[in-house]
Length: 362
Image (cartoon, rainbow, N blue to C red; front, side, top):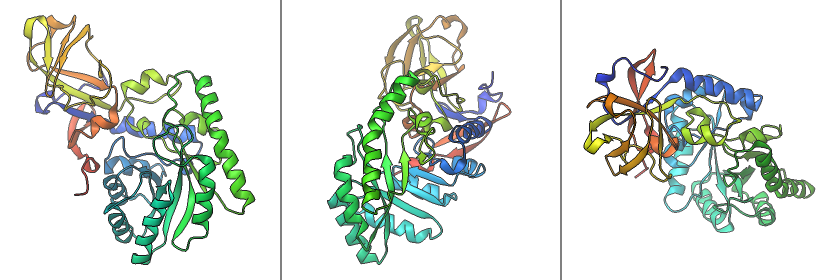
């Protein structure tokens, strides 16, 4: 099978295996769906690895999106030339952000804002450091997490437009609240929620304000926003893919390029115990939080920090130390639990990559 490795005895578990050839193919499919690499601004939160940034650069993707300063720094270190930090900057993060701008003068940095107070803090820092900061207005068109409502964003854009220290580069519109499997239903929801954004862009134009780049969506809405050539696309999960999106977005055709690997560590009471606890995979999803590639799950008996106990019909075929391969339901926070991943080429785990941006900045 494509995911199996021939040097199992040399691999520590639990671990993540990544497959560069499959990542490259996923990037190619992303570009094909977008129509052109210039339309893509992929999120780096899924992988958090410089090597994956470089694989995208090889296919002419130069714009990226990040959620943390560590992700921002990692992307700049590995050649990203245009990086949007889609997260509010407050407190000491502002000065760290400005320090990164100075450290990487050949990279374009921008950050989202959604409130006058946030703009005020950025302006104070910009004046103190004698630097003009590029900003995207974060728009709330239904997610209700961060962002200004479209009707409030108009006044915010007007204030930024006359600022000497803030430069409006675009609008950031993340519609992660849309989780509909059926494509047509999802498209209707996406288009309906975007109507207020389109009206905002028109009103800005009437005021002589250029809205700039429209950085849109995530993975669920990727194929919908791709139909509108004026929009930039911000998927992240398609780079590695996972069991959750594989089942919930059947219209997207990407390859699983990251596999969770564990070992049989015990066979208690007719069940199988693996070294695949909460600390090996994202635990926020309902069970089952993984999809085994080579065995069935009849029932999840127990999962704790370091253990996963299941009932399976494969009980008699599994021995202590046997390796098992699985797809996490949610790959992004799963990757963040691992300091390194094994890189698989020709069915051999040949090296490791550091998950650099899993760390914080202090």
